[in-house]
Image (tube, rainbow, N blue to C red; front, top):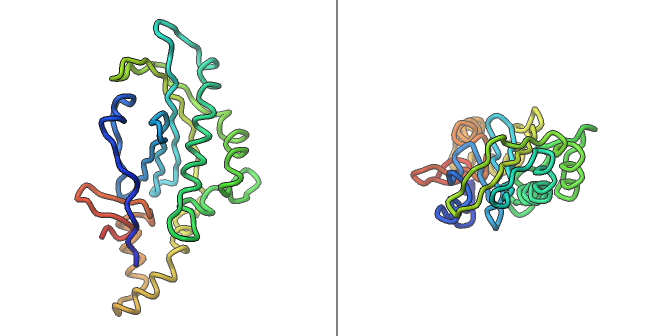
Length: 205
C-alpha cells in the first residue's frame, strides 16, 4: 500500500541535447522536466527547497543582459511550477499539498500557483552569468527561481500517510512509529522517491 507508481519515461539523450547533465530523481529529490525539456524542477524533500530553472536560447552571436533574459524565462518558469504543484501523489492529494505558503501564511494550492510565483518568487529569480553551449548547438542561459517550503513540510507530508501507515502496521504487527521512522530515513516522505537500484516510493520497495 505504500508503493508509489513510477513517473513518466526519462529520456537522457533528449535532455542532454539542451542541458549540461540529465539529472534523475533520488530518494530525497524529485526531479522533473517540462515536456519540451526547456525547464527543470528539483524538489528537495530533506531541506525543503524547490528550485526551477528555465533555459533561454540566445540568437547566435548575441549577448543579452540579465534584465533582457529574465522576461523570456518567466512563462516557462511559471508553467513548470504549475506542473509540479498539480502532480498527484495519490487519488486525492497532490505531492506538494499544504507544504508551500505565501507571505500571508496561506497554503498555495494548484489554482493559486501562478499569481504566487509571479508576485512573490519571480522578482528574486537569478540569471546565470555564463551561457551554456548545448549539444544541439544552441547557446542558452539558465534562469532560476527558488521557493522555500513551509518549516513543517515533513510533518505535512507525513500526515498524508498516517491512515495507510496505521493500517499496514496493524496488518504486519509492527509499531506505526517504526514505519514512520523508516519512511523518513528512506525518503523523507517523498512520494516520488527512487534510487539507482532501482527502488521506488516512500519505503524504497
